Amino acid sequence: MSKSSGRVWPYAIGASILLIFSACVATIIVTSKMPVEASDTYMMGYHEADASANEIIQAQIAFDKKYNIAYQTQALNVQNTQLIYRVTDKEGVAVDNAIIKVIVTRPNNHKHDQELLNPNINNGVYTFAPITLAQEGRWDIMAKVEVDAQQRFYNLKADTRAKETFEY
Image (cartoon, rainbow, N blue to C red; front, side, top):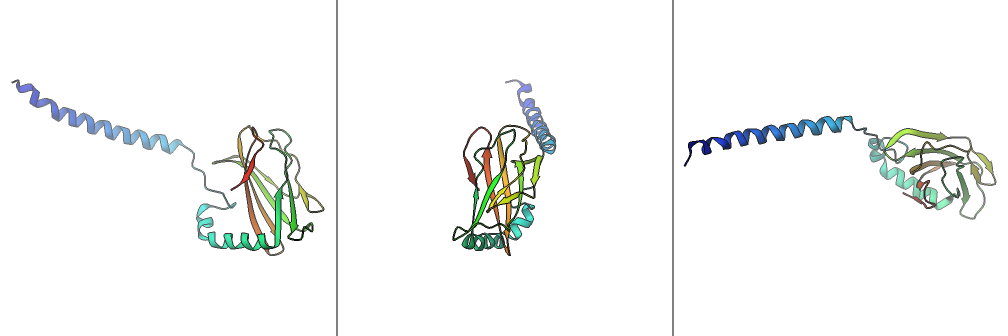
């Protein structure tokens, strides 16, 4: 039996502690360089959305009892995308006094946000000026619709590479 075999394990423990500490430091450095974006599901910070979640849901239910909103854009394209919404009451009568604010954004990245205001209104159809998207891929289309005292958020996920659009 050699006396040197009993001296190796303290060095192994010290090296593993140093390795674990180095991994922790590397994790902190890498994650601090990653962008962290605030949630904007309801065009507000996530703290505000969380604090008023019940009111947002109640407002959506009240809006849906009186009005219908439909996204009528055929497909999302990188060039000349024109967003179109139709707002009617429950009897199908066109609503021309809605205020619609739309933000087109990439998920978890606000670098390419585009805010759309002042659509052309014709018989309940709200048509926004054509926009150019910065790149292909997935986009979030977030709309805030107000009619009289009622309001609703109408958030969609769309992709320039696919025709499907769905509400979230």
